[in-house]
Structures are given as structure tokens and as C-alpha cells.
Length: 300
Image (cartoon, rainbow, N blue to C red; front, top):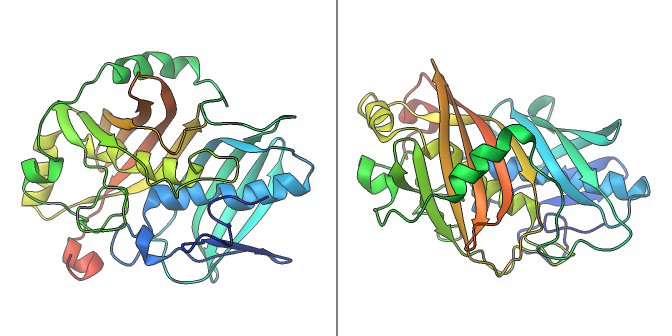
């Protein structure tokens, strides 16, 4: 099975499947923190080796319905990593290593059908406890405000593939504050971000949801972190894919703060089309790190 990540025709191909498993090399285009991969992209890329094994297991027209992942450390870009997959019940456990070190691990849930999953087709339903959250997020409207980094006075990771203004080949998703703990951003994907089934690649959807789930941290708290030269990084991400997103769609990404517990911040984000139909929702844990950006990345 071929997807965006392993398509040989993709100039930014990420994965190559061989007898030993899957070799992964994420290009610098997908950068998040300097030298490392955008967390959402790394989470979404776990689906590629899982789909490959699901196909070998006999799944036809397989599609990803959920990826739940934990980031153990920075995931370097432009370096070969190895992914291992094991089946657990009806899902697939995927672990990506840099040498002997585990970078990211997660569980991928897959569905299959007799026919294909064309764009806009349903994949899964959100659990009951997320219905109200989705309904609230669907009502958020364009605040006609400047991007968050203009309001706070800085962008902690300006080269980020998802939300960075200095990544010329990024997604250009710039969340804007639409209330306390709420952000809104418009997005029109590049038409090249497509899987072989014709829908927007799940890895790209995951990346699109990444940053908004953290930038919804209330502005005053972000400004305080900037004043003390602190920042926060993605610790875990749980993405549910509800529908196959058309690659030519016009979308908005809504972020919603949930709670903060010391150095941990919990947020959510969702992808909607212009009619308010939800295509995916993510729940994230972010970790406020104790070192400065210069200590972590040598400056930005």
C-alpha cells in the first residue's frame, strides 16, 4: 500500500519499506524545533508503516481512524530512523528509533472496507465525551486578529512546518486568538499533500492539528513564558480521523485550552471545513521545558 509518506513519486518521501521493516528519513522541510521534526508530522507518519503491515495482514482499502502517540525525545530530521510494527488486537503498535534510542511510539487504529474511502467519506465517530467540545469549537469564528506571534511579540519556533512564518514550504497555519484559551486559523492545503486514495494525507492532517492544540494556551501565560525565556514542546498527541479530507478543501483549525497542571498543559484542536463539518480532532499534552531556547537549540 502506498501513501503520501512512502510514495516514490513524492520528492519529500519519508518512508521506504524493506524486509527489515521501515526506514524513515524526514526531510528538513518538516522541521519543528530546530534540528527536529514537527511533532504532529512525526505522529502522523506512524500511520505509514502501520498501513503497510495492515495491508500484508489482508486489510483492503485500509484507512487510519486514530493515532495515539508519545514523543520520548526530539525526533531528528534528515537522518535515517527505523520503525518497527507489531499487531495488538485490532491495532498496530509502532516504535521509531534513532539507533538504540526510542524517539516516538504510538498505537495506530485502522479500518478497512470493500470499497475505497473517497474524500468526505466517514471514517469514525468521536467518543461521546468529545461531542460537546466539537460542537463548541465548530462555533468559533474568524476573530479578524493578527497571528498569535504578532500579539505575543515572538514566535518561539519560527521555522515550524505547521505554524512557522519562516518555513517557506510549510503549512502556513497561523492561529489567531479568538478568546481566552481559544484560537482560530484558516488553511488551504497544498494539493500535493494527497494519499493514493485521493484524500488529504493523514500525516499532514496530524501536523495541521499539532500547533493549535498548544498555541491555545492563554495569551497572558504565553507572554509570561516569553518574558522568562521558557517554551513548551509536544509530549503526546491523540488524533481521531473522522472523515477523509479533500485535498482541495478550505479549512479552519480551532484550538481550545483544556487545563494546565504545573509544567503540563492540555489542549485540543479540530479541523473543520467552511460549513462547520469536522474532519479530525486531536487532544494533546504539552510540556513546559526548564531550559532556554538558546540552551535547547543554540538560538532561533
